Image (cartoon, rainbow, N blue to C red):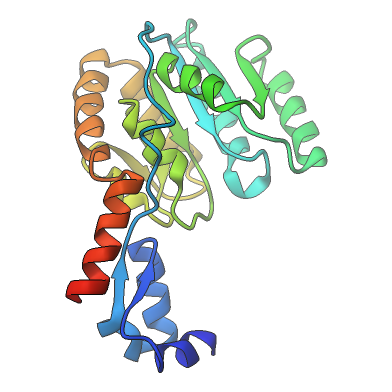
Length: 232
């Protein structure tokens, strides 16, 4: 109802992903001519890569709650852990669901991943830069997203990305791997492909860096100004 109401008074309506666009059109088909996509950008002035060696780390940056699919990532990592004994999993982000966190700790212990999975918690921007700079693979296995900035940040640090087909995931197409939400076996296969192929990680890293150049705050602002003043 709000979409229909506001659309009567708007010349343009900006949404953050093509998934959001399609969902809006499903609700109000007449909106389609007015909708434009502008992806959430990242701050390239605040988050700048540091010179450090890549380590064998799979990284996720997300709130620790069920919708982020952290349980799927831990389970998938366990499926390939014995094949890649030097790799670790680091989970960065605040715990917003204590009961879920307790289940994750039990899951880690039950899968024999003690010492290989780190719950880092919330960190500063400078610490986040270090996490992105050290990692070799980024994973976001969410069940729902608007348009994740963490995915874009990871690409800006040259990380190959594995993510689920949720809002904004199209930015990863061609520079990473997209799977269905909840597909643990698919996630394990994707991890296996990237963990076992350094040359592929390097190629995807180069593509991710190039793609991220068009996903800064500045580029988002320029896109919005163009839409407002040129109506394109």
